[in-house]
Length: 144
Image 1 (cartoon, helix red, strand yellow):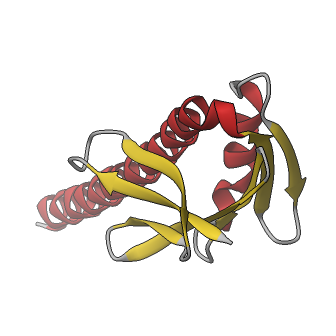
Image 2 (tube, helix red, strand yellow):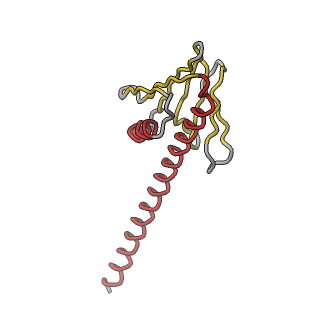
């Protein structure tokens, strides 16, 4: 089984995916945590593989599955494993570039979603701290 290689260009840019014949797997990370592992292998004129969400990102599986299903190229066949939080794919090797771009876009959207949720969580925490401080100030003003 070979891997999908990637080269993150800049943190905010899409992930570049190249489907190839390497003998290792690819890991897509957010920060220091692995988000997705991608494996693929060539069998004649077909390329088969899987994308698996890692622990900690399995809550993204419904979104991952939906994005993967909605905009997929015509010749890309996919199946899902809810238990493994994985998507299995197969396509004709002539579509390698098109499918690589598609997977790159899917992974880029997932990374943006993770980043959005992180920022949103920080905003909510800051707002809660501000309200708590505001409440303390208000209580101390009324205590006099």
